[in-house]
Image 1: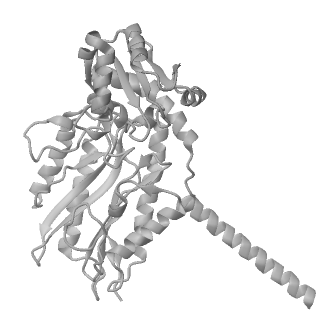
Image 2: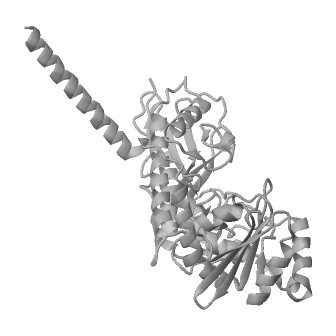
Image 3: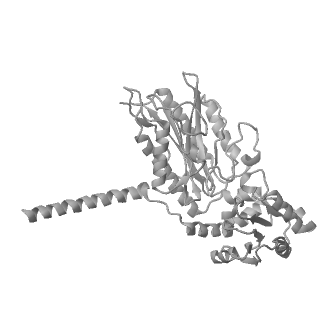
Length: 446
Protein backbone atom coordinates (compact mmCIF):
# COMPACT_ATOMS: atom_id res chain seq x y z
CA UNK A 1 0.00 0.00 0.00
CA UNK A 2 2.77 2.42 0.92
CA UNK A 3 4.54 1.83 -2.37
CA UNK A 4 1.32 2.24 -4.36
CA UNK A 5 0.41 5.40 -2.44
CA UNK A 6 3.88 6.78 -2.99
CA UNK A 7 3.66 6.06 -6.71
CA UNK A 8 0.23 7.68 -7.04
CA UNK A 9 1.41 10.70 -5.07
CA UNK A 10 4.46 11.03 -7.34
CA UNK A 11 2.24 10.89 -10.43
CA UNK A 12 -0.05 13.58 -9.00
CA UNK A 13 2.91 15.80 -8.16
CA UNK A 14 4.33 15.29 -11.66
CA UNK A 15 1.00 16.12 -13.30
CA UNK A 16 0.62 19.15 -11.07
CA UNK A 17 4.07 20.36 -12.03
CA UNK A 18 3.32 19.87 -15.73
CA UNK A 19 0.07 21.82 -15.41
CA UNK A 20 1.81 24.66 -13.60
CA UNK A 21 4.53 24.76 -16.26
CA UNK A 22 1.91 24.83 -19.03
CA UNK A 23 0.09 27.69 -17.31
CA UNK A 24 3.32 29.59 -16.84
CA UNK A 25 4.24 28.96 -20.47
CA UNK A 26 0.90 30.29 -21.72
CA UNK A 27 1.11 33.39 -19.52
CA UNK A 28 4.61 34.04 -20.76
CA UNK A 29 3.49 33.82 -24.37
CA UNK A 30 0.59 36.18 -23.79
CA UNK A 31 1.93 38.84 -21.48
CA UNK A 32 3.89 37.88 -18.40
CA UNK A 33 7.42 37.72 -19.75
CA UNK A 34 9.36 40.54 -18.06
CA UNK A 35 11.19 43.06 -20.20
CA UNK A 36 14.86 43.28 -19.22
CA UNK A 37 16.76 46.55 -19.45
CA UNK A 38 18.46 45.47 -22.67
CA UNK A 39 20.76 48.39 -23.49
CA UNK A 40 22.51 46.47 -26.28
CA UNK A 41 19.23 46.27 -28.17
CA UNK A 42 18.92 50.05 -28.28
CA UNK A 43 22.59 50.58 -29.09
CA UNK A 44 22.39 48.41 -32.20
CA UNK A 45 19.14 50.02 -33.32
CA UNK A 46 20.30 53.60 -32.86
CA UNK A 47 23.39 52.91 -34.97
CA UNK A 48 21.15 51.62 -37.74
CA UNK A 49 18.94 54.69 -37.35
CA UNK A 50 21.92 57.00 -37.88
CA UNK A 51 23.18 55.07 -40.89
CA UNK A 52 19.87 54.37 -42.64
CA UNK A 53 17.43 57.10 -41.58
CA UNK A 54 19.46 60.20 -40.76
CA UNK A 55 20.70 60.87 -44.34
CA UNK A 56 17.15 61.09 -45.72
CA UNK A 57 16.01 63.18 -42.75
CA UNK A 58 18.83 65.68 -43.28
CA UNK A 59 18.03 65.86 -46.98
CA UNK A 60 14.32 66.42 -46.36
CA UNK A 61 15.16 69.13 -43.80
CA UNK A 62 17.60 70.78 -46.21
CA UNK A 63 20.60 70.73 -43.86
CA UNK A 64 24.18 69.65 -44.50
CA UNK A 65 25.36 69.22 -40.92
CA UNK A 66 24.04 68.79 -37.39
CA UNK A 67 25.78 69.70 -34.15
CA UNK A 68 24.57 68.39 -30.78
CA UNK A 69 26.28 69.43 -27.55
CA UNK A 70 25.91 67.20 -24.49
CA UNK A 71 26.86 67.69 -20.87
CA UNK A 72 26.32 66.24 -17.42
CA UNK A 73 23.16 66.92 -15.34
CA UNK A 74 21.48 69.15 -17.93
CA UNK A 75 21.79 67.01 -21.02
CA UNK A 76 20.21 67.37 -24.43
CA UNK A 77 16.89 65.46 -24.80
CA UNK A 78 18.39 63.68 -27.80
CA UNK A 79 21.60 62.62 -26.06
CA UNK A 80 20.68 58.91 -25.99
CA UNK A 81 19.99 58.98 -29.72
CA UNK A 82 23.56 60.03 -30.58
CA UNK A 83 25.58 58.35 -27.82
CA UNK A 84 25.89 61.35 -25.51
CA UNK A 85 23.97 59.95 -22.54
CA UNK A 86 27.15 59.42 -20.49
CA UNK A 87 28.62 62.87 -21.08
CA UNK A 88 30.55 64.25 -18.12
CA UNK A 89 32.57 67.13 -19.44
CA UNK A 90 31.13 68.91 -22.48
CA UNK A 91 31.00 66.69 -25.57
CA UNK A 92 29.90 67.40 -29.13
CA UNK A 93 28.41 65.15 -31.80
CA UNK A 94 28.66 66.27 -35.40
CA UNK A 95 26.96 64.77 -38.43
CA UNK A 96 27.81 65.67 -42.03
CA UNK A 97 25.70 64.65 -45.01
CA UNK A 98 27.54 63.42 -48.09
CA UNK A 99 26.88 61.35 -51.22
CA UNK A 100 27.41 58.08 -49.33
CA UNK A 101 25.15 58.96 -46.39
CA UNK A 102 26.31 60.59 -43.16
CA UNK A 103 29.73 60.97 -41.58
CA UNK A 104 29.60 61.22 -37.78
CA UNK A 105 32.28 62.66 -35.51
CA UNK A 106 32.19 62.67 -31.71
CA UNK A 107 34.35 65.05 -29.69
CA UNK A 108 34.76 63.99 -26.07
CA UNK A 109 37.02 64.53 -23.07
CA UNK A 110 39.26 61.67 -21.96
CA UNK A 111 37.41 58.98 -20.05
CA UNK A 112 34.02 59.03 -21.73
CA UNK A 113 35.84 58.99 -25.07
CA UNK A 114 37.03 55.47 -24.28
CA UNK A 115 33.50 54.15 -23.94
CA UNK A 116 32.41 56.04 -27.05
CA UNK A 117 35.07 54.20 -29.04
CA UNK A 118 33.94 50.88 -27.55
CA UNK A 119 30.32 51.52 -28.48
CA UNK A 120 31.46 51.99 -32.09
CA UNK A 121 28.57 54.30 -32.95
CA UNK A 122 30.54 57.03 -34.72
CA UNK A 123 32.92 57.04 -37.64
CA UNK A 124 35.46 59.03 -35.64
CA UNK A 125 36.00 59.89 -31.98
CA UNK A 126 38.20 62.93 -31.30
CA UNK A 127 39.68 63.01 -27.79
CA UNK A 128 40.36 66.31 -26.00
CA UNK A 129 41.91 67.07 -22.62
CA UNK A 130 39.37 67.18 -19.80
CA UNK A 131 38.52 70.80 -19.04
CA UNK A 132 39.94 72.16 -22.28
CA UNK A 133 37.68 74.29 -24.57
CA UNK A 134 35.79 72.26 -27.13
CA UNK A 135 34.93 75.16 -29.42
CA UNK A 136 38.19 75.22 -31.33
CA UNK A 137 37.98 71.53 -32.15
CA UNK A 138 34.36 71.93 -33.35
CA UNK A 139 35.52 74.74 -35.68
CA UNK A 140 38.39 72.61 -37.04
CA UNK A 141 36.03 69.77 -37.98
CA UNK A 142 33.30 72.03 -39.37
CA UNK A 143 35.89 73.83 -41.51
CA UNK A 144 37.01 70.50 -42.92
CA UNK A 145 33.52 69.70 -44.25
CA UNK A 146 32.42 73.33 -44.89
CA UNK A 147 28.62 72.75 -44.70
CA UNK A 148 26.17 75.38 -45.98
CA UNK A 149 23.40 74.82 -43.41
CA UNK A 150 24.17 73.59 -39.91
CA UNK A 151 21.32 72.40 -37.70
CA UNK A 152 21.46 73.01 -33.95
CA UNK A 153 18.94 72.10 -31.26
CA UNK A 154 17.13 75.40 -30.79
CA UNK A 155 13.36 75.37 -31.23
CA UNK A 156 10.05 76.05 -29.51
CA UNK A 157 9.56 72.27 -29.71
CA UNK A 158 11.05 70.75 -26.55
CA UNK A 159 12.67 67.66 -28.06
CA UNK A 160 14.64 69.84 -30.51
CA UNK A 161 15.49 72.54 -27.97
CA UNK A 162 18.34 71.01 -26.01
CA UNK A 163 20.95 73.69 -26.66
CA UNK A 164 21.02 76.14 -23.78
CA UNK A 165 21.41 79.88 -24.27
CA UNK A 166 24.98 79.87 -23.00
CA UNK A 167 25.87 76.88 -25.16
CA UNK A 168 24.48 78.61 -28.25
CA UNK A 169 26.39 81.80 -27.49
CA UNK A 170 29.58 79.80 -26.98
CA UNK A 171 29.07 77.79 -30.17
CA UNK A 172 28.34 80.88 -32.26
CA UNK A 173 31.48 82.59 -30.98
CA UNK A 174 33.57 79.46 -31.58
CA UNK A 175 32.35 79.07 -35.17
CA UNK A 176 33.08 82.70 -35.98
CA UNK A 177 31.57 84.96 -38.63
CA UNK A 178 31.92 82.41 -41.44
CA UNK A 179 29.74 79.73 -39.90
CA UNK A 180 27.57 81.24 -37.19
CA UNK A 181 25.25 82.70 -39.83
CA UNK A 182 24.77 79.22 -41.28
CA UNK A 183 23.13 77.90 -38.10
CA UNK A 184 19.47 76.88 -38.39
CA UNK A 185 16.98 75.14 -36.11
CA UNK A 186 17.07 71.33 -36.12
CA UNK A 187 13.27 71.24 -35.75
CA UNK A 188 12.52 69.88 -39.24
CA UNK A 189 15.43 67.45 -39.05
CA UNK A 190 14.32 66.06 -35.70
CA UNK A 191 10.73 65.72 -36.94
CA UNK A 192 11.77 63.79 -40.02
CA UNK A 193 14.34 61.58 -38.29
CA UNK A 194 12.49 60.54 -35.16
CA UNK A 195 9.09 60.08 -36.79
CA UNK A 196 10.18 57.09 -38.90
CA UNK A 197 10.80 53.78 -37.13
CA UNK A 198 12.88 50.85 -38.34
CA UNK A 199 11.17 47.48 -38.93
CA UNK A 200 12.70 46.07 -35.72
CA UNK A 201 11.34 49.03 -33.77
CA UNK A 202 7.88 48.53 -35.24
CA UNK A 203 7.93 44.90 -34.09
CA UNK A 204 8.75 46.01 -30.56
CA UNK A 205 6.02 48.65 -30.59
CA UNK A 206 3.49 46.11 -31.82
CA UNK A 207 4.37 43.92 -28.86
CA UNK A 208 3.96 46.88 -26.51
CA UNK A 209 0.57 47.67 -28.06
CA UNK A 210 -0.64 44.08 -27.64
CA UNK A 211 0.40 43.99 -24.00
CA UNK A 212 -1.15 47.38 -23.29
CA UNK A 213 -4.52 46.31 -24.68
CA UNK A 214 -4.43 42.98 -22.82
CA UNK A 215 -3.71 44.63 -19.48
CA UNK A 216 -6.64 46.99 -20.03
CA UNK A 217 -9.00 44.09 -20.80
CA UNK A 218 -7.74 42.20 -17.73
CA UNK A 219 -8.21 45.28 -15.56
CA UNK A 220 -11.89 45.46 -16.41
CA UNK A 221 -12.33 41.88 -15.17
CA UNK A 222 -11.57 42.97 -11.60
CA UNK A 223 -14.28 45.66 -11.51
CA UNK A 224 -17.13 45.08 -9.01
CA UNK A 225 -19.82 47.73 -9.60
CA UNK A 226 -20.65 49.62 -6.43
CA UNK A 227 -17.30 48.73 -4.82
CA UNK A 228 -14.41 49.23 -7.23
CA UNK A 229 -13.09 52.77 -7.64
CA UNK A 230 -11.41 54.24 -10.69
CA UNK A 231 -8.23 54.46 -8.60
CA UNK A 232 -8.47 50.71 -7.79
CA UNK A 233 -8.33 49.91 -11.50
CA UNK A 234 -5.30 52.18 -11.84
CA UNK A 235 -3.56 50.45 -8.92
CA UNK A 236 -4.20 47.05 -10.47
CA UNK A 237 -2.61 48.22 -13.72
CA UNK A 238 0.40 49.65 -11.90
CA UNK A 239 0.89 46.25 -10.29
CA UNK A 240 0.84 44.51 -13.64
CA UNK A 241 3.39 46.98 -14.99
CA UNK A 242 5.71 46.18 -12.11
CA UNK A 243 5.37 42.44 -12.73
CA UNK A 244 6.61 42.66 -16.30
CA UNK A 245 9.16 45.44 -15.73
CA UNK A 246 7.72 48.17 -17.93
CA UNK A 247 7.45 51.87 -17.14
CA UNK A 248 5.01 54.70 -17.85
CA UNK A 249 4.57 56.08 -21.35
CA UNK A 250 3.72 59.49 -19.86
CA UNK A 251 3.37 61.21 -16.46
CA UNK A 252 3.04 58.38 -13.89
CA UNK A 253 0.25 60.05 -11.90
CA UNK A 254 -1.85 60.30 -15.08
CA UNK A 255 -1.10 56.82 -16.39
CA UNK A 256 -3.40 55.02 -16.55
CA UNK A 257 -6.27 57.48 -16.74
CA UNK A 258 -9.40 55.63 -15.59
CA UNK A 259 -12.59 57.64 -15.93
CA UNK A 260 -16.08 56.29 -15.22
CA UNK A 261 -17.64 59.76 -15.04
CA UNK A 262 -17.93 62.84 -17.28
CA UNK A 263 -15.06 63.87 -19.58
CA UNK A 264 -11.93 64.90 -17.66
CA UNK A 265 -9.23 64.95 -20.33
CA UNK A 266 -5.72 63.82 -19.40
CA UNK A 267 -5.86 63.42 -15.65
CA UNK A 268 -5.28 61.19 -12.65
CA UNK A 269 -7.74 58.47 -11.65
CA UNK A 270 -10.10 59.58 -8.87
CA UNK A 271 -11.83 57.87 -5.94
CA UNK A 272 -15.13 57.70 -7.81
CA UNK A 273 -16.93 54.37 -7.27
CA UNK A 274 -17.89 52.66 -10.52
CA UNK A 275 -21.66 52.24 -10.82
CA UNK A 276 -24.13 50.36 -13.07
CA UNK A 277 -24.78 52.38 -16.23
CA UNK A 278 -21.27 53.91 -16.24
CA UNK A 279 -19.17 54.18 -19.37
CA UNK A 280 -15.54 53.63 -18.40
CA UNK A 281 -12.70 55.12 -20.41
CA UNK A 282 -9.26 53.62 -19.83
CA UNK A 283 -6.35 55.48 -21.42
CA UNK A 284 -3.05 53.69 -20.84
CA UNK A 285 0.46 53.36 -22.23
CA UNK A 286 3.67 51.56 -21.35
CA UNK A 287 7.34 52.07 -22.20
CA UNK A 288 9.40 48.97 -22.94
CA UNK A 289 13.19 48.73 -22.78
CA UNK A 290 13.11 52.31 -21.48
CA UNK A 291 12.66 53.47 -25.07
CA UNK A 292 9.46 52.58 -26.99
CA UNK A 293 5.96 53.67 -25.97
CA UNK A 294 2.37 52.60 -26.52
CA UNK A 295 -0.88 54.56 -26.18
CA UNK A 296 -4.21 52.73 -26.37
CA UNK A 297 -7.72 53.19 -24.95
CA UNK A 298 -10.36 50.61 -24.12
CA UNK A 299 -13.99 51.34 -23.29
CA UNK A 300 -16.34 49.35 -21.07
CA UNK A 301 -20.00 49.62 -20.17
CA UNK A 302 -21.34 48.57 -16.76
CA UNK A 303 -24.61 46.75 -17.27
CA UNK A 304 -27.54 47.78 -15.12
CA UNK A 305 -29.55 45.02 -13.42
CA UNK A 306 -31.57 43.23 -16.11
CA UNK A 307 -29.46 44.57 -19.01
CA UNK A 308 -27.61 42.21 -21.33
CA UNK A 309 -26.19 44.91 -23.58
CA UNK A 310 -25.72 48.70 -23.56
CA UNK A 311 -28.65 50.98 -24.46
CA UNK A 312 -29.22 51.41 -28.19
CA UNK A 313 -27.96 54.99 -28.22
CA UNK A 314 -24.73 54.06 -26.47
CA UNK A 315 -24.18 51.17 -28.88
CA UNK A 316 -24.79 53.54 -31.80
CA UNK A 317 -22.29 56.11 -30.53
CA UNK A 318 -19.62 53.45 -30.21
CA UNK A 319 -20.26 52.23 -33.74
CA UNK A 320 -19.99 55.80 -35.09
CA UNK A 321 -16.69 56.30 -33.27
CA UNK A 322 -15.36 52.96 -34.46
CA UNK A 323 -16.38 53.60 -38.07
CA UNK A 324 -14.69 57.00 -37.98
CA UNK A 325 -11.55 55.27 -36.76
CA UNK A 326 -11.66 52.79 -39.62
CA UNK A 327 -12.16 55.57 -42.18
CA UNK A 328 -9.02 57.27 -40.90
CA UNK A 329 -7.01 54.05 -41.28
CA UNK A 330 -8.23 53.68 -44.86
CA UNK A 331 -7.05 57.21 -45.66
CA UNK A 332 -3.59 56.92 -44.08
CA UNK A 333 -0.81 56.41 -46.61
CA UNK A 334 2.50 58.01 -47.61
CA UNK A 335 2.16 61.47 -49.10
CA UNK A 336 -1.08 62.45 -47.31
CA UNK A 337 -1.08 65.38 -44.88
CA UNK A 338 -2.14 64.99 -41.26
CA UNK A 339 -4.67 67.77 -41.86
CA UNK A 340 -6.41 65.74 -44.58
CA UNK A 341 -6.68 62.79 -42.21
CA UNK A 342 -8.21 64.95 -39.49
CA UNK A 343 -10.69 66.48 -41.95
CA UNK A 344 -12.10 63.02 -42.75
CA UNK A 345 -12.77 62.46 -39.06
CA UNK A 346 -14.38 65.89 -38.57
CA UNK A 347 -16.72 65.43 -41.51
CA UNK A 348 -17.78 61.99 -40.27
CA UNK A 349 -18.50 63.32 -36.79
CA UNK A 350 -20.58 66.21 -38.12
CA UNK A 351 -22.53 63.93 -40.46
CA UNK A 352 -23.49 61.64 -37.59
CA UNK A 353 -24.45 64.27 -35.02
CA UNK A 354 -21.36 64.26 -32.81
CA UNK A 355 -20.31 67.39 -31.00
CA UNK A 356 -16.90 68.75 -31.93
CA UNK A 357 -13.89 67.85 -29.80
CA UNK A 358 -10.91 69.97 -28.88
CA UNK A 359 -8.41 67.23 -29.70
CA UNK A 360 -6.90 66.36 -33.04
CA UNK A 361 -7.55 62.93 -34.49
CA UNK A 362 -4.13 61.63 -33.53
CA UNK A 363 -0.45 62.09 -32.82
CA UNK A 364 2.84 60.32 -33.46
CA UNK A 365 3.79 57.73 -30.84
CA UNK A 366 7.14 56.05 -30.32
CA UNK A 367 9.94 57.32 -28.10
CA UNK A 368 7.37 59.44 -26.29
CA UNK A 369 3.62 58.95 -26.12
CA UNK A 370 3.41 62.25 -28.02
CA UNK A 371 6.33 61.76 -30.36
CA UNK A 372 7.85 63.78 -33.20
CA UNK A 373 6.19 63.80 -36.59
CA UNK A 374 3.04 64.88 -38.46
CA UNK A 375 0.02 65.93 -36.42
CA UNK A 376 -3.24 64.26 -37.44
CA UNK A 377 -5.08 67.45 -36.65
CA UNK A 378 -5.69 71.05 -37.58
CA UNK A 379 -8.90 70.72 -39.60
CA UNK A 380 -11.01 72.14 -36.75
CA UNK A 381 -9.01 75.38 -36.72
CA UNK A 382 -7.78 75.93 -40.26
CA UNK A 383 -9.19 75.49 -43.76
CA UNK A 384 -5.77 74.40 -45.02
CA UNK A 385 -2.79 72.42 -43.71
CA UNK A 386 -0.49 74.45 -41.45
CA UNK A 387 2.38 73.58 -39.10
CA UNK A 388 2.84 69.93 -38.27
CA UNK A 389 -0.55 69.08 -39.78
CA UNK A 390 0.93 70.03 -43.17
CA UNK A 391 3.64 67.39 -42.89
CA UNK A 392 3.34 64.43 -45.21
CA UNK A 393 2.94 60.93 -43.83
CA UNK A 394 5.88 58.62 -44.56
CA UNK A 395 6.33 54.87 -44.49
CA UNK A 396 7.44 53.70 -41.05
CA UNK A 397 5.71 56.45 -39.09
CA UNK A 398 3.65 55.30 -36.12
CA UNK A 399 0.56 56.97 -34.70
CA UNK A 400 -1.94 56.69 -31.87
CA UNK A 401 -5.25 58.10 -33.01
CA UNK A 402 -8.91 58.25 -32.03
CA UNK A 403 -12.31 57.68 -33.50
CA UNK A 404 -14.54 60.24 -31.72
CA UNK A 405 -18.16 60.62 -30.76
CA UNK A 406 -19.24 63.22 -28.18
CA UNK A 407 -22.67 63.99 -26.76
CA UNK A 408 -24.46 65.57 -23.79
CA UNK A 409 -25.89 63.08 -21.29
CA UNK A 410 -29.20 63.35 -19.47
CA UNK A 411 -27.51 64.89 -16.43
CA UNK A 412 -26.06 67.68 -18.60
CA UNK A 413 -22.48 66.43 -18.52
CA UNK A 414 -20.47 65.67 -21.65
CA UNK A 415 -19.11 62.24 -22.56
CA UNK A 416 -16.76 61.31 -25.37
CA UNK A 417 -16.02 57.92 -26.82
CA UNK A 418 -12.50 58.09 -28.19
CA UNK A 419 -11.63 54.74 -29.72
CA UNK A 420 -7.82 54.89 -29.67
CA UNK A 421 -5.54 52.41 -31.40
CA UNK A 422 -2.00 52.46 -32.77
CA UNK A 423 -1.23 52.24 -36.49
CA UNK A 424 1.86 52.20 -38.68
CA UNK A 425 2.12 53.69 -42.16
CA UNK A 426 3.14 51.09 -44.73
CA UNK A 427 4.38 51.43 -48.31
CA UNK A 428 0.83 51.57 -49.68
CA UNK A 429 -1.41 52.40 -46.70
CA UNK A 430 -1.53 51.72 -42.97
CA UNK A 431 -2.24 48.85 -40.59
CA UNK A 432 -3.13 48.44 -36.93
CA UNK A 433 -0.32 47.56 -34.55
CA UNK A 434 -2.57 45.35 -32.40
CA UNK A 435 -6.07 43.92 -32.64
CA UNK A 436 -8.54 46.85 -32.37
CA UNK A 437 -11.53 46.95 -30.04
CA UNK A 438 -14.62 45.83 -31.97
CA UNK A 439 -17.27 45.64 -29.24
CA UNK A 440 -18.05 47.10 -25.84
CA UNK A 441 -16.36 45.38 -22.92
CA UNK A 442 -19.33 44.52 -20.72
CA UNK A 443 -19.19 44.43 -16.91
CA UNK A 444 -22.04 42.69 -15.13
CA UNK A 445 -23.71 44.09 -12.02
CA UNK A 446 -24.63 41.77 -9.14
